Length: 435
Image (cartoon, rainbow, N blue to C red; front, side):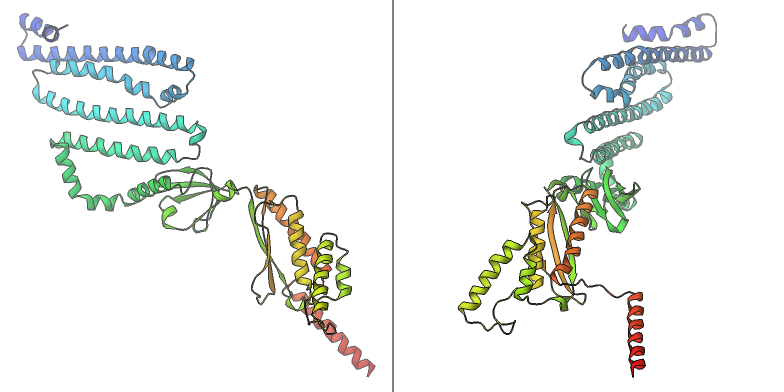
C-alpha cells in the first residue's frame, strides 16, 4: 500500500465522525485513539508471531546444526533483540502518519525512537559479543585467554560510543562537536573513572604481554593469594587458593606489584627442589685410611672412593708427602665424601630428572653451620607428589649423615639445657662424694 493510501486509511474514522456532525477536534482525537489501539493490537500480534514462530523456528534450526555458535545466540537472547526490528519498522512507518497533525508529539517520538534504536543496537552488539565469548570458551585454544576481560573492554567502548550518540541526539549537537566538548572535560572524567581506566589499561597489558593466563598458578603474598587463576575481568582477577577459598586481586596490581607465576615450572619438564642441610662445622674432619675403608662398605660411593683414594695416594707418594701429620698433602674429608654420596644418590633416584641440573654445593658458612644445598628437579610436578619426593630425599640424607661422622646443627631446646645442667650437677655431686 502506498503512503497516500495509508494516510487515507488512518484518517478514515476522522472523516466518518466529521461527516456525521461530530466536532472536528473531538473527531480528530477519537480517530487518534482508534489508530493507537489498532497500532497496539498490530504490535501485540507481530510480537506474538515473532516470539512463537520466528524465534521458535530459529531455535529448532539451531538444534539441527553441528556448530554450537547458534546455540549461544539463543542463550544470549540475540533472536529476541533482532526480532524487535520488525515492530520498530512498523512504528517508524505508521507513527508519523498517525501523529501528522500533532507535530510536537511527533518531535518527541522521533527523539525517543532514535534513542531506542541506539540502545537496541548496543543490546544486539552485547548479545553478539557474549555469544562469541561463550563460544570461544568452548574452544581448547582459548581456554587460557582472558576472554571476559576482552569482552568487557569492547563493551565499554560500545557503550561510550552509544552514549555519545544518545547525548548528541538529546542536545542536538553533532557527534564530533560533542566528542570535542567531552575532551574538554577529560580531567573530570579521568578522576571519576580512574579505577576503570586503570583496570582497562592493566587488562590490555596483561593480555598483550601474556603476564597471566586463566589456569596459571600464581602466588601473591600481598593479597594472600596462592592458587589457580579462574577468571580475569576488567577490574579483578579471581584466584582459587589451595584451601578452596577465593581471593580477588585488582587487575592493576598485576602490573604495579610483584607476584610469582609458576607457569614456567608447569611447562618445564621438572619442578625444582632447592633446600639446604646445615652441618656443624666442628664435625668436619680429614679421613684416615681406616675411615676410608669403613666408608667403602657404602656401595653407592665405593667405586668413587677406590679411584679417588688411589689418585691421592699416588700423588702423596710421588711428592714424598709426610703423612705422619694428617693435614699434609692431599686428603679426603667426611663432608666432601658425603657431598659426593648425596650427588650419587640424586643421580640414582628414579624420581629425579637426569637431564636437568643436579647440584650439591656448599654455601657460605653461617652461625648455624655450613649450608649444604641440594638443587635438582623432580619429574613429577604435581604438588603432593613433589612434596613426597622432596621429603623422601631429605629423610634419607639426614639419616645418612651419622655414617660419615658428621653432625647436623640444631639449636638447643629447653629440655636439652636442663639435661645438660642436671648431668653437670650429677658429676659435681659424684666428685664431691669421692673426695
